[in-house]
Image (cartoon, rainbow, N blue to C red; front, side):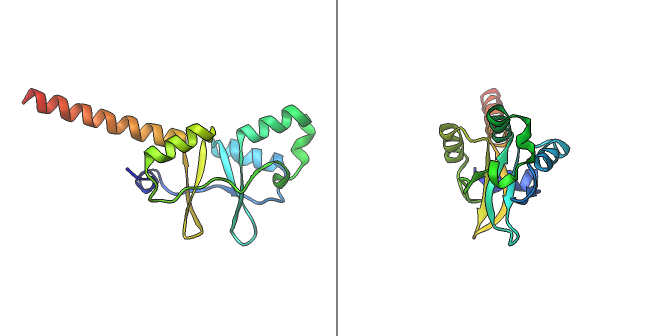
Length: 142
């Protein structure tokens, strides 16, 4: 199973913010869209970073609530780890688990085409395991 299979079923909506937005504005996007991370893109559409709930919490813990007036560029994780649409789910799950990453931008030929979360990967793996178990039960019963 590949990343593209998940993107095809969940859709490819990507919520992005600009590096010059305030952290408060980005937090509003996270809350309004009920998502855990936003992609940071420059004016030319190039991915320059990712801003996650964890990034926000860490910065509030160290800098206090005044950090909400800082720019996204000051708080984001720059140059995020990405994956391609043909990446295998087992590889992605291992990478995300080992690096403690919950969101990966999916890039194809330098263009952002989606975001995959560890929840997306785990859900797909569970769905596949349940289908295989049902097929085995049916096979054994026949």
